[in-house]
Image 1 (cartoon, rainbow, N blue to C red):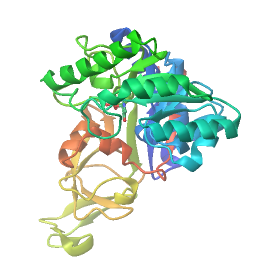
Image 2 (tube, protein in one colour):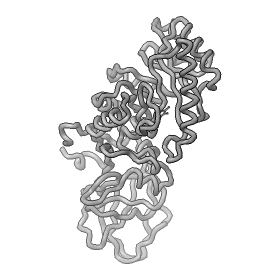
Image 3 (cartoon, protein in one colour):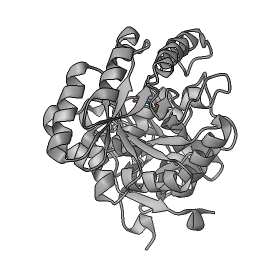
Image 4 (cartoon, rainbow, N blue to C red):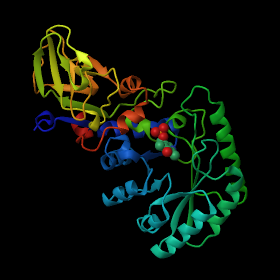
Length: 376
Ligand SMILES: *Cc1c(COP(=O)(O)O)cnc(C)c1O
């Protein structure tokens, strides 16, 4: 049955696009891809997106939280998987037992992971995070050699990786990223001289991974570009990437409203003349923000959202001559006819970035997955 007969609002996810984007990125970078599938794969659906990226040649998955990595394992995705962020001490043993790689940046982390490894009866796979300037998590660069030694010498620990994260790679001005890269290179050099280089060294996010001038080391951590979205306005994607997400809804109700009528909560909007007003079963509890202005596509044309966006519904003003009826398809993000609304356009309206827009589409919105075969 068509999606529009099944759902009030839904996402269509083009898994072929994700597969293609993974392949394209690794061609450009000349390095394999670690598919960053945190936050439900930036709203695209964790497990299907991970499968698609792996089909596109990705060799690793990365997530922010242990729960996300466990979901991959639950789905029998056995590819190497790294938790990029903090893992609480009580969860370490389970992570190790499920062969999930973890990020550490202190002596105490190593001691705790080694104890958990004994408990799990398996080695802890650990990546040392170095803070070269992002200022979030990570060991200071000068502490890295001693920590690397501890990782290499602690029983029950497999020193698997070394990494850092860039703060400003998505800007035209690459001066600070260059400095971060140089600091990281010097840490890596020190480890190499001491015979402590781990097998998987990584630094680049999407922005840095797609820049030929940046070092790509053993793998690039590809997030936003995997989904065909631009790292930033200053750092657009090269050719050959496709957005994977379309957000659609069915019009639930269409009517003519006479002039002077207040609409939706607090009557923030009044009709000026007889107006064709349509209701959409989409609201802020789906991730469609209350911010103004908002617009959507109906019948291949941009139409404004009018009145307050409610929790589960909102209203749009159709053109006078619009033939739209209840049951017609609405596009919130994606193409319809000759028009398109990109996640980047929505981000501008909401004074945020495209990451925030797609990650904010909540779990209750059904994801419908199109395979390569179906979508091409
Ligand atoms: C989220 C994240 C990434 C992915 O960044 P993109 O800009 O989406 O490519 C890479 N590395 C770390 C540490 C992250 O937290």
